[in-house]
Amino acid sequence: MRLILVILAISFLCISCKDDPKPKPKGFLSLEYPEAEYNRINIGCPYTFEKNSIAKVSPSRNRIPCWIQLDYDQMKGSIFITYQPVKNNLDSLLTDAQKLPLQHTIKADVIEGDVYTNDFNKTYGMFYEVDGDAASQAQFYLTDSTDHFLTGSVYFQSLPNFDSIVPAAEYLKKDIRHLMESLKWNY
Image (cartoon, rainbow, N blue to C red):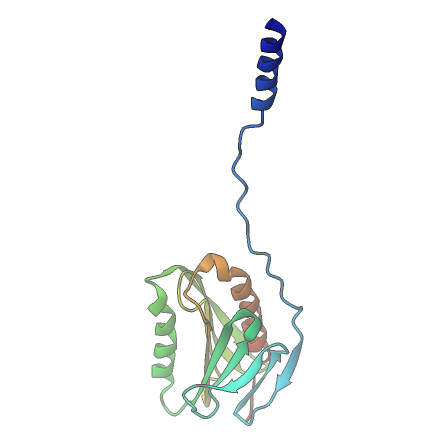
């Protein structure tokens, strides 16, 4: 009987001796997108630029000439591009373009603006990066200061949740920078 009690006690000790439960590490999205391949597009507007081959060009919802969307179906995101000719209204166009990123200050953690200058292509403007749960993660404007004014914004087809859209937002920011660097005005 004693032997049975000793065996049972040892059995209970062996069964109950397991590792303490530990929390699992946080998981992060592992989203990978294709290497960007750029092609120059000419859509009959006063500007041309190189776009990523995975982006589909479509007219904007407003149907205003030379306002377009670059749709990235895989990311459920778009870059909205608007164009306006400069007609003694450069100050108001600049003011409007500079106010646009400020509309996201309620949800944004940080808004950083970088001055962009390309004397060879006569393109001058700003690139804004927006971090946080803002509706738009990047915005820009370009002008030649005399005839042309172009703006662009990134939007996703989902509620803004910065942590989940970071990979796609970074990818689209690179495409915007390439668009800005490759933009040429048609005179």
